[in-house]
Image (tube, rainbow, N blue to C red; front, side):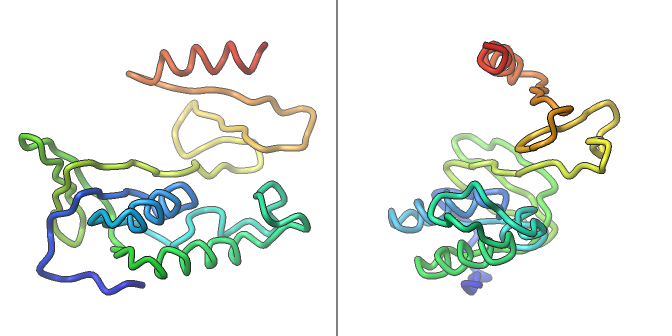
Length: 167
């Protein structure tokens, strides 16, 4: 991991989540020479690292293990000097134009925050740890359907997504 300066606490962009979406955002912002910080609470690469074979990621026609894909994305982020903090985000506050991200390792501020918190793990019944919420994504079983679940400001997006999915 790129060494995180103990003295630096203010960034242009803070990215919450170190899975594929968060690492991609971090690679873009670091390449764009924006002062960036990626915060991940677990394994860099996210849940994809637990996938035995990823067959739908461009550039890997034979598939790639999730762990290897996560490691390759991590290496690319390191190449561009993206600082990564392993910590849990415990809060997010607005203070004027600054966004304050509170973590188990301290507080950090940024002009913008990208939330790429990732997938919700499920059991074999497609149940999540959130009561009443089921998740279906890239599945091959004909008995499962894609579902859109949203709350708050995501309701409008969910309505449009539902129309798109049902044709």
